Length: 388
Image (cartoon, rainbow, N blue to C red; front, side):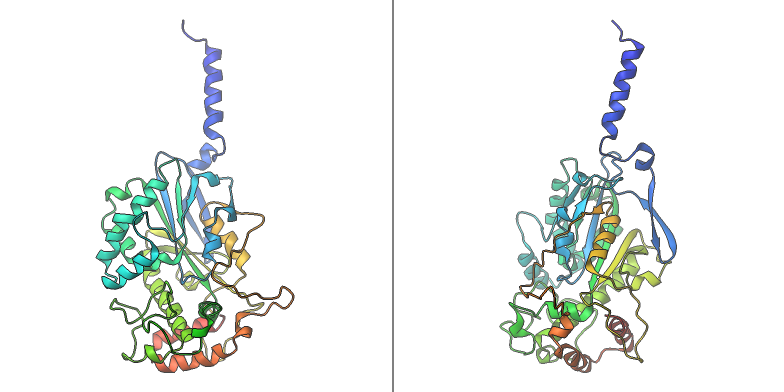
């Protein structure tokens, strides 16, 4: 016999309740999230809208040693009103079962870091892994590790030139997160124990690397760089911390190029960045820049330096900004993994990195003299030093 009208109504109500459990309301699922960017409103789709099989990818861009281990930890986040955390899958320095980051760096050097090499790694390893991890009902892939420095040009080329690629089917949105730490603090972080022996000398087991075994870029490995060496011997004359300074500057220069190509405005979170002064960027992807420091106050710039182009804040504030950007909320208690440092600083005497390594500023001046940067590069570095 046919079911009664009242029975059908009860079933309908039950289905509605089930479909909205732990998900945004229907009006919100079809709505948009607005964030402030340099005084303007940037409207963008919600990450966890749960519509069909669409998925989102959020990638980080950084030097490493900037707190991305914590930012890639699911425990750092809680569900928001618009996005349950269970729909978000986190990855960190993962490429797939057949390759790891060390092999990626070796192959990147072997193949001169070409765009075609990067694209092949994405198609053979990274994107199939991401698709597999999202296959069980996940909606968002978040990887804020600095492994992207070896793949980002290929990623940009693939998505802009071949968006219909089978591995990109269902990709609804790409988001980029530029995580910066105060520039000299970043360089110092690459040198503190157990690598401290390489900070102030030029003796290296492998003269091509800033620090032995480091997962970073170098200017003399055969691939194009934004900040080339003035001559072939310049690199060998730099100490470990000076090489780390070059690395931090190279990543910033690359971000300026990539960001101006793909960012759709620079969403200024707590601790905003240099692209935030360019509100008319017309790229396809929303971007977030966050900058933090361990210092109690930003380092003061000299009178001849440019005004600080970024807003610097503490690490806790950038966690909240990143959480909001990927559609979640920061957890009430966030564990700082401090994955790369064994240096213990007294909770009472909270020295900054610059206080622990006062030689850094002197070595920085020597670094600039040896590198012979052009005027535009010097302006970029000086602008950072004005507040970092």
